[in-house]
Image 1 (spheres, rainbow, N blue to C red):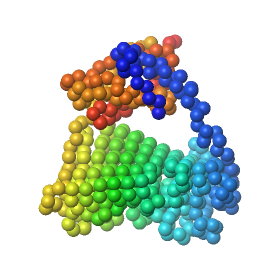
Image 2 (cartoon, rainbow, N blue to C red):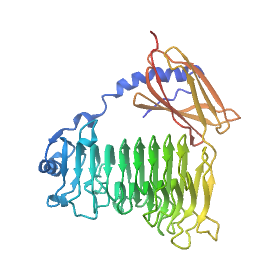
Image 3 (cartoon, rainbow, N blue to C red):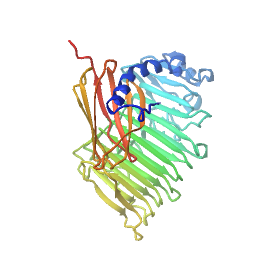
Image 4 (tube, one colour):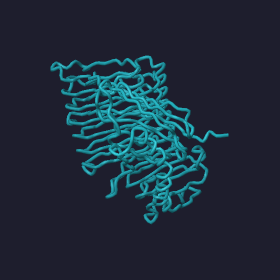
Length: 470
């Protein structure tokens, strides 16, 4: 990230102007700095034996395995029980623009403890293909391979996942993950008709001490499942799961999202943060087929379950659409576990207000000590930008509903390059702020802006600046 702090030496009009002018220059300078993208060698395969040979060959660590169109039925007599276990730094790629043209079928595999495609060794990616018919495994894609000395970065994009217990199991379990950070980006996937076992489209599961899991969801579709997305700190201590969801669609599940800050009697001191921006939660009304999913709707979020104690979940919903969820659009609980007897204690659900009126219950079952709570947080600051978005045209940026007399941190992205100004301006005593300027020549391209004020983020503004001259 490029950090630009010119607060002390630029005028009010000049600051944003200069930043926007610099966008194209920064992007041009940084574009070559992606060694993995150009250094990754390619191995091309067109049949099942070659696919296994490519994936299982240690000398292909760091390679991109590119699969020709066709259906690849996995064979249980091959190494690793017929599973595809990616080498360190390896990517598995189908055919760009048509994920249905490459199909990996797991219907013949017999292994019950994991999935047909396994990731987790450093930086791994699976893109542009279909994976289906896992009849016995935990998920179609698992991230359960032991971590390496490298940071763990997972990417799953443009993948169709259908028929199994789970579509994706993004998990970090055991002492090998203590104190580690695992990052996952999941983009433009279709996760549908996951109807076996727990029937979860995707699970983000953290079970370690002091570990961090960062999940980025972009433009995915979750449909036909009991739960679209399940996220939980399971028997963890001081674990953190952060989920940033934008442009995702949760439709025709029992629950779009099921979020648990801490589950299990040894879960304590955990945090789960879920932010939804421009998501859709529609018609999540499926009948219950899994015992633990006793309710449903758009989002079900809780501080803890199964005697978890001292855990916290934060839910922030920004500019998202809810419709046709008959049980509830949003249900939040400090503690929720109506099947397991006495509740845990000291659990919190924090909710940032939105246009949706949620169902709010401190504890189900009731907490005799009254320590499980639902807290409504202050609203997000409102950010608006008005302009015709042409070079040479004026722009006006307004902030409202923000903390009074507080520093504004300005964050942006220009043509794929992130930047920020840590101490850009300060809000007025009524929590407002206005800035004006002009889009200069050289600012053409795609941009995003958002603010952080007193620890609270605004929604992200996206716009494109064009040369509008005839």
